[in-house]
Length: 339
Image (tube, rainbow, N blue to C red; front, side, top):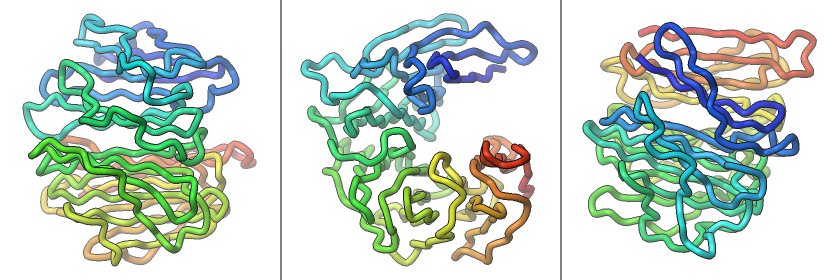
């Protein structure tokens, strides 16, 4: 049994440690960003599906424009502090500010997808093959005008049946986000394609992509910066379904946190059922999607951070919610969704 924990602290240290079933190991220092950029997630990590090795990608230091990676095989760092790419000049021009990874859900597969944004609003993606990072044929930066680098402007998810990769990032123009699709068969990366959601009143600051375990649907959730909107739209395996686009709220709690969480259920027979939870200045709300989104149920207190997690074996869904740090009581709650 092994669980990996990655953290960034108030001094800017990025560290990782492991739970072996009874104790935590000592932390390993991966990089330091100082105290100016200690409030962004400049790292992410995923286990390979077949080999169970942990791959960590991170910003090794402030001003470093090349993301580094390390690979843990359960007992040893078999690769450590290695550059994701060695091209010169580097495709991205700023230091790495936000990292997002997702592993391929297909059995006996070690592929992991990576997308990251830098402090100069550049966006770039790569694919881990199990032995090396592949640029999927893209030798230049994907975009140089991504939106807010101190938030979460990028997301990535796999289609569960085909193994295709959906990369998404927020553009600096309201109503616009961009995506690229990497097809598993044949292996080809699409051009950047705009996804226009006309109801968005400002640029997107927070992005989340989640895949349905039973089909190739992908749910995209977003939060806008100054319009305080929380919305979703669904990918049906071929295209973004305009009829599925829903704006759930126009009064999110704040701009400093991701006020929503989305997830598909993992219970047997719950094909396509998904949840969204989100917080505003008064309550936390939740909605269930079956053929469409049901009515919202509101409860509790104002909520700034929401995380939904689905257990990979039992399918049980956990919702973790936290209040804004300026609230009178900084409460932390958990809820469980059972089959």
